[in-house]
Length: 311
Ligand code: ADP
Ligand code: MG
Image (tube, rainbow, N blue to C red):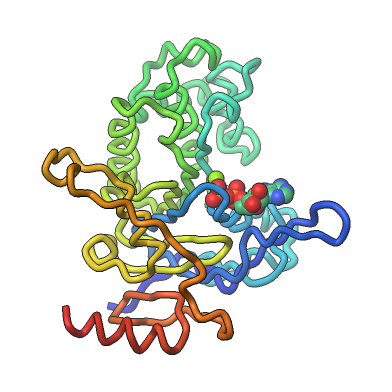
């Protein structure tokens, strides 16, 4: 079967000018594809450029360089208002902090209906209300919640409202930027399960951003690991967990606690030392074993390949 690419990110760059002659290279040449129907997890510590990657893909920021293709179409090139609107409908974003991404002065009805209004997807007020109430049920809330305001809900419920808002325009692709990081551990799994069910029912494709690897493993088909604006490793989810190659990925994995006292007693935290790489050579993204990519120098590449072959 030919791989059905929904999103192609090609050498994406986003640099911010901060103060005099200073730039932050938040995203510095990132490339990956997302296949239709898959969940691509993007992980990395705070400040590694995950949110900027997501926000640039969806055009909240103009890219400094590189390309983003959606359904084979360049979405960062010059586009008419109409084309942009069409594209905006297909790609939606769910944010980390549901409180600050929901307007406190708007009712849940108006928040969720915003996309319906912008894209003129409903004919009248009755249909508008009906659609919103259906969506509330789809995300596990009640029809009666439509008349309420965001502050009347718990964090988990607010995130469900954010999900309903994204779903309203029937997108193909959703970027979820740490959608559960601000939630109580006890409700994180509920929201993840909701996202998984919606994906199955609606054939959605996800870019799922997280700062640690524990929940991403459970939801993602493939995972990309970011470090300081670059992707350092990319592999199928299981493969990344079982055979991490880049020392930064190993350090991230060593930070995950497991509910096994024996393991916990012996768990060693590995700290990543970026100076271990030969700095005289610019590392490149290379395929060490089938579908398993690592950013490395030529020498590291040979070594990683040898180690992978011995496994
Ligand atoms: P992450 O989501 O992985 O925590 P971000 O994408 O938010 O990382 O940030 C990556 C880097 O870019 C950080 O150094 C951050 O300070 C910087 N950055 C993000 N947004 C801006 C901005 N609007 N202006 C200047 N610097 C920014
Ligand atoms: Mg972020």
